[in-house]
Image (tube, rainbow, N blue to C red):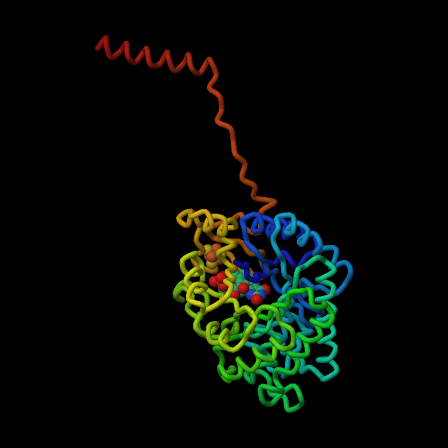
Length: 378
Ligand SMILES: Cc1cc2nc3c(=O)[nH]c(=O)nc-3n(C[C@H](O)[C@H](O)[C@H](O)COP(=O)(O)O)c2cc1C
Ligand code: SF4
């Protein structure tokens, strides 16, 4: 069981890393085998929002060490997601494969030059190396949901005519270069996950043959585990709300799995143990990632393991306190578990039952005797 990446808002300010550490530690205690942090950018251009969470200096390493230490105390693994927002960045430094504004950000991105692309590859590698120094067990390279790498992979945005555009081999060059550079910088003993967009759900999105070509190239470039991403943020097709049936997109994961030999992870709208079990048992995926269900219940895994499925606080896929908060630049939490991301602030304490005083007991006896007396008298 893997906890999927969720940018909670705590990543963006250094003074919140203690809270972030407590949030992950609670889920590690709850039995999750491996957790993926919310998206952390490799440079300024990749910020999600102004001065968003990055991993590119020694000071960042010190902040992130608080998180990795807290998780490792509970024998769980933690992966840092490297996310470059591209044209989804909510700031004036946004860049992309082509200068096409996204419908979800007011800022028109600048087209990346070849020099800029080569520098960004180096930024990814440096970020991964620093993540390793901070104690992370690996990194996840975010290549889906319409962020920068997805903006290169798909001709929905990539209209380039140079070596980074054209057919799928040109469009995937930047992405493959990033994975190769990250592997080279971090060595063999380091997990590299790649979140692959198995279906883009936008006009001119990649077809299945193209996605398979990318998956094979990424495996060869050094990816350890392939993760599933579904649809761009600007897609008009619902991908995670309550109306989407459980495990609705798992067939796409299963199709990719047939063509690669590294483990393949299923994601999106898997929230109960029976669904997860069926996917693995039928061989559609090797691993399960769940994101929001771990906001709703930090102890999901232990409850499932102990046959207490009925005690799981189920995520109802409403998005009201998690994703809606993210898009309003507020800290995420959960409608059915307000303690999520507030572990150090909303602390439930067991209160002792107050002892009854002697006077209280005498008073009770007096009332009883009086009412009994009045009953007898009447
Ligand atoms: C608050 C929130 C923030 C998210 N941030 C990220 C992110 O930074 N990177 C990422 O790859 N996915 C992110 N996601 C998407 C989740 O990883 C996941 O794909 C999505 O929630 C659907 O899976 P689920 O039904 O298991 O929650 C986020 C989701 C939520 C709810
Ligand atoms: S706010 Fe709603 S969708 Fe988000 S984790 Fe909680 S129950 Fe799930």
